Image (cartoon, rainbow over all chains, first blue to last red):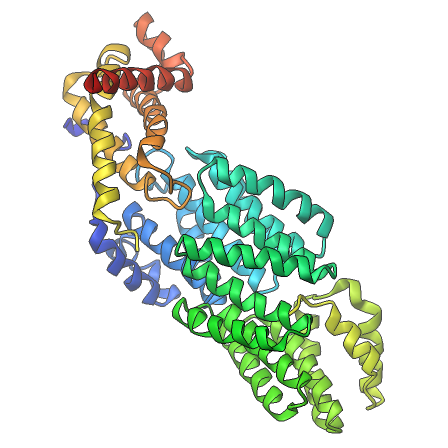
Length: 368
Length: 123
């Protein structure tokens, strides 16, 4: 090897594939404010390490989205610094795109839609420069469609999801194709076509089981529990919830675990067991608070308020609404629900909660 | 973690090993890379391909990722001469011609060559 070749992308590899996994854990366990000064000791620009970090962060998006977002943001900023080189050829662009995609996905869970959109723009700008860019753009397209689902752009999602499912298959990305079915099923549920949504999710469960994709099986089974509840199939709903719970725990999917507890709360409430429902909602709320899913937190406070009103506990209900409103304001949530929000706020001022406004505001949140 | 099954790791090695002959030939004969620098470029290409095959967007069979390796070979040769000549003009006409060709076109050519080698091995 010629000594003068150093500036060409022929850089020394620091970490082995095996060592990188432990090193990735070490980096993420290091407080963010200490990482920059220890960058060379931590090998922050080592491509093998970055590959492991990205894999860890992808798994943490569903367990600790706020932490995953902060970690991805730090690494993106670090790698984006002028003059920074990473690995060979397209690797710097790839890692920048991947980190931006992770940050954007985490922001979506955190209900920070504008921020998510900005990260997706960054991801796209980097992915187009990478080898196999089309597959990365497809992964990005899925995230954008998921965001559009949350923004209730249902026609756009239905058309896009079926188009991208075909593309994912032709790119050999079976999981991506399956995830497009999730979007289709969720839109069917949102547009009142719940039996069709159940059929879609049953298909997802079969495919996820066949491919031993526990992560997707866990989410799909949890979602089926919600859909069966909506159809009044309590037995099936509880069976799905019982099956989903250990799977979600196994895959450490705290985002969907919180949603499952919320769903169980709804079932218990419909069965007239208000006290048990309240416990389940509180568990969901605690889980959402711990992982920073502020959208679910606000919605759950409103659900709990509604339940407390049922029980005649108006003052406690007031506190729940008072807990939800600052989150809604700070995150600029439900801009389309300003009128209902105004009525709710006014009723709170009069210390007589407007039940209709409360439910209308709650209706603007994605279902639990 | 990104530590992958020995099966896939073996696949990565096998695909690279098989492609290496045509990569070396292209670097030597089309891109006129001096012998003393060949190994370093090949080493970079192997490291890149090894990690590339483990990206989440590259979950299909490793052999189907081989055209990407060939496209990157062309990119490596371009980067190499760009660095070697500090971005200046390259005097050799054949090298200039090779560097200005579409990497996709060269990748198809290399892929065809490997395909022919595999066909020969089978028969």
